[in-house]
Amino acid sequence: MSDGGLDDLFGMADNPRSAEETETVAKRRSTLITLAGNAIVIGLVTIVITAGLRALGVTISLLLLISLLIGLRLVILAVTSVAPPPSPRLRSRIGSGSPPAGDALRAAVRRWEQNLDRAHSDPELHARNVLPVLAELTDERLRLRHGITRASDPRRARELLGDDLWSALSEPGRRALKARDVETYLDAMERL
Image (cartoon, rainbow, N blue to C red; front, side):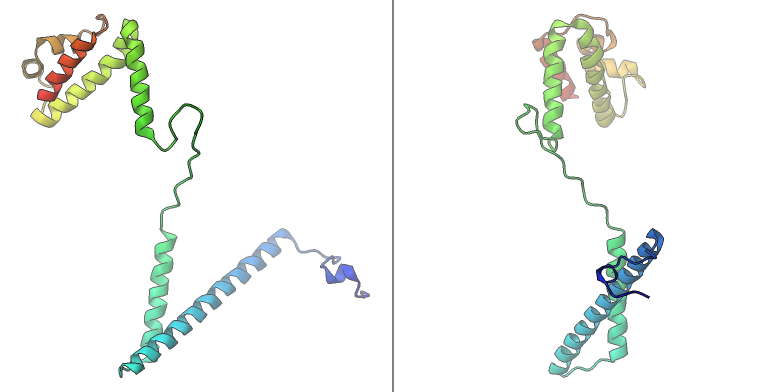
């Protein structure tokens, strides 16, 4: 027997519920609340639609209307359950000297600028970073415009690229390219 003290009032019972029981009760309660909320919404919408149709002089079977509204609610629930998750909020690095996290294009351009600046003075870095990308761009341009790559039809690719660009891309151990050479090669790639 309890004396009806404050412990009883605030739930400090001798037999506390386990975490699983509490979770099960909470799930059952939330399911019941959800179902009741949906039933109330469907009931209110049924009343409004019925009143509107009767004002227009149109009658509809109440069972059909409720079935349609339940079906519509189920479709809405199905669509919301398969919706993609919200995109994560990216933290911006304002004030850190680097572009915001959401601006990937600006970050890529800045990375390219830095690589090209360093490649002017370091021929090995140029051969390792710049030439492979130029070769990929050239192969992609050849593939898109002519249906070939440098590897698939080297003779035709050499004709299209010209000897200067061909030798620059096929001899990776060369010296670093000068700015005017890069411009000439890029013009040749754009003419493809």
